Image (cartoon, rainbow, N blue to C red):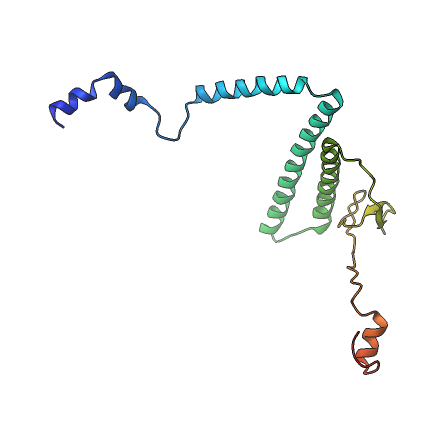
Length: 175
């Protein structure tokens, strides 16, 4: 290093460059100040929100947190069962049903926050285990966790009678 480089290194500007954080990193005090400013703006915006919306926002926050915890819990339980090569489907089904309940509640709160008129979805049927109504696309009963069997109905698919007739050689061409 030359004498000139050493002299330049002692200047206040060079010290600031040497002590500055690496490119792309933001000092913690700046992040904390930005977080305080954001919190003040959010509280000012929240004070303009109607009380019922504030309750919905708080409920959405709680449900989102619960959903994330349940999802992580379900994944963790499955992982532990898988590494021990002992998967218990009843436990996984109950946890998935609880996750489905929280997800349905969260979707309802989201619709209410968007101002959509919430109409109860027509039930897809009754649970064979407990008799509780479930949605058309539900995979598990939200009440007891029983696995729900769904048969996809294709209006263009041949009926059972047509399939039997075709396999027995009667009936000719398929519809």
